[in-house]
Amino acid sequence: MSFTSRQAIRLSDGRELIYFNEEKQSDRAKYADTRHLPPPPPTSQLRYDPLVDEWVAVAAHRQTRTFLPPSDACPLCPSTPSFASEIPAPDYDVVVFENQFPSFSDRIKPDEVTSLTELVPVRAGIGRCEVICFTSDHNGSFGKLAPSRVRTVVDVLADRTTEMSAITGVAQVFPFENRGVEIGVTLHHPHGQIYAYPTVPPRTQQMLRAAGRYRDRTGRDLYTDVLAAERKAGVRVIAENEHWTAYVPAASRWPYEVQVAPHRKVPDLPALSGEERDAFGPLYLDVLRRFDALFGKPMPYISAWHQAVVGEGRELGYLHLQLFSIRRAADKLKYLAGSESAMGAFVNDIVPEKAAETLRAL
Image (cartoon, rainbow, N blue to C red; front, side, top):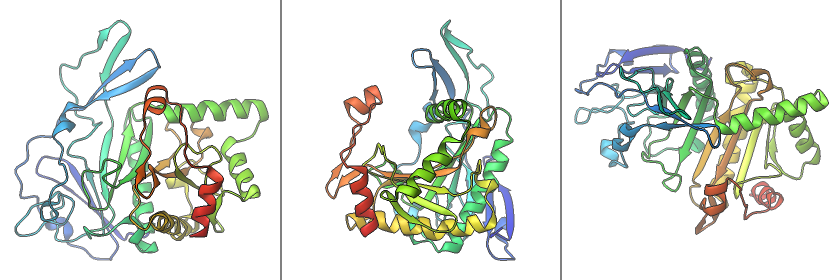
């Protein structure tokens, strides 16, 4: 592990916060949360949509979440004598805490509704949502982190995946980072989130069905064969090292999309070896720098870890990271308009091979 100590405290409203310290000694846990916060909201409500066989979360309390505060009132910066943030200590390396406005939690309403109609059952959105801050530097970014800090982040995500997967009712743990106001980010401080879902999300369900059909037909693992084919073709590969390959998927949905996958099939982040964790950072940082160099300015992106589910179908999972941007030109964004939003049918404006060629050449 790249972090040497792990210190958990409780914030004034009872939420958990964990410092992951890179140095051997730390007194960060001695700092108390001096704010007087109301109790955390109850969990969201899940409503079943029978027309598409999907669950939708309704979390009205998220409407009041913090929106683009000034830098001197950033809730993700360390606390100062003049401002008490979400992090009580005056500095930190990597920190994780329960989201103040969670999409899912284990705090259940006593009068939880069980159905709206005979076709629309309702259930509590049991799970957990956490915020992970990669650095105390408000003006930093993931792409500016040192490889050693990236290793710490990977170790922290592995730690949280293990703990959150053990929560009763959790179906999948999903770490991700949103970057840029174009994506919808409401806090500029470099951070990500970790969702522990109470149901298997639609994209994962699609991937499991495809992998299951492929296994039944061939007896082989689908992602293993896709990755091998991309490495052999080479035309869409951006970068690679001994343990990882970064490539543009042949059927990319987004203008600029890269998947970063380990050469060895593992289900999730906790299953990565120390060597694989060390090798991830330099390659991923290289890809992020290429994204920022593409148009000469910070690239808005979503970075999403796809991990195996907790229960049935876990053996079909193959850990990989999906990085993509909605920016299709220096002054143009790809909006999810009629075909994408209404029908889920993507039309990409950039030929994947051209995207790979451009990113490779930067």
